[in-house]
Length: 138
Image (cartoon, rainbow, N blue to C red; front, side, top):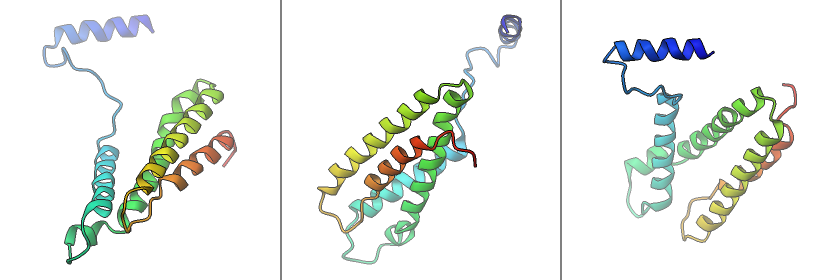
């Protein structure tokens, strides 16, 4: 492992284009989908529904579905490293903490006057339940 890191380091120092670059594990497609889901959820919760609005029409219903699917994808990606390392308790704790945060945020958003249904509480409870089944075979 050390030799591989040393070889990569010397290759980076010889190649000025690669110097200073940090390899990222981000997935641009997932990040774009998260951005669209969050913008859609903000639109659903904040735009006035007094007049026809194409942004609201586009995001109503679709944003919450995309948000929920991406929450599951995010949970799988976040717990993958801990599970591969054999740290099941760490993965469970991370899911429970994430679920508790979502429940708290959902309860706060529920205090806002909005015609939209806040799904964060349900999503948070799902994360807590998901923690119990993290090692279950599919």
